[in-house]
Image 1 (cartoon, one colour):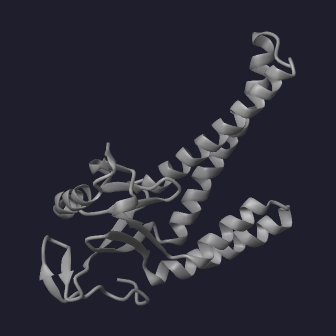
Image 2 (cartoon, helix red, strand yellow; image 1 turned 45 degrees about the horizontal axis):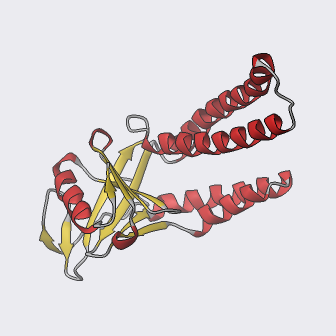
Image 3 (cartoon, helix red, strand yellow; image 1 turned 45 degrees about the vertical axis):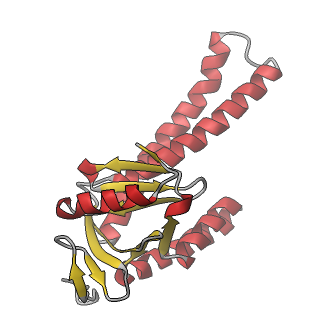
Length: 218
């Protein structure tokens, strides 16, 4: 164990292999993700990237059609290949960035979960939050230099926040990825991921499903 990492020592009732119902009524457990064997975070980045590119592509395509810039299949291909090239470049950059980030984290993503009858919280462990905070401010600075306000916003959000909380009553989609030890708990504009070991997964899955009464289960 890293000397800077404080061990998680709960007190209370043990409800599964790694999950404790603590004296304050909160279920708590820690999870360590191998960032090479479980690329869930990278897949989430690809999904967000794909949606963003898809929206921009459709907007430009509709605009070109309205302006009659695209008149045949050749024009369509010429307009599309630019986006495909850019998508390929960002795809490769995302892999490189992910590997750099994983190396900074020591190839492990460590997180603490707190779960009550009303919500679940995903909390980065203090050792990693310091690194994430530094990366966040670096992103902010680079965004300012490049004149890209969306990069500035991204950097500020990363550096200022180390916890993601999902209220069960507001969750709209619950997606279970058992092979990746992941449960996606998503609201309309806020997405969260809950991780659990194999021995704890059934308990966490059932607990979340039973309380997300408005959610679509996938």
